Image (tube, rainbow, N blue to C red; front, side, top):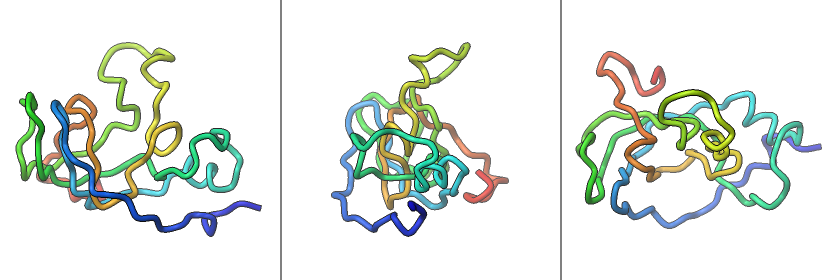
Length: 131
């Protein structure tokens, strides 16, 4: 049987920010039902995505911005969108084709990079855990 014991610590190079991306130092993540279900083999993506970085929710601090980024600056407190391609409007299969920690590497890392449109500011009144 699969379970959280199947997760393994891995080493990845620290990501480099590209044009229109923000680099985030992750301060908090959460273990959601889907993460648990993936680990147990109850829900998921066939082995083609393994190994993968799990978890879909994270908040942190912007440490670098790529050329063209206009909404964020280093030091901003942010959270990452679960569906990085769904920015607005009605649900569609194309907007939810990629989901963090599932079909796309997730956020259980020290640093992550995402397109500017896949990130939102976190109010100062929220802790990183609340965000």
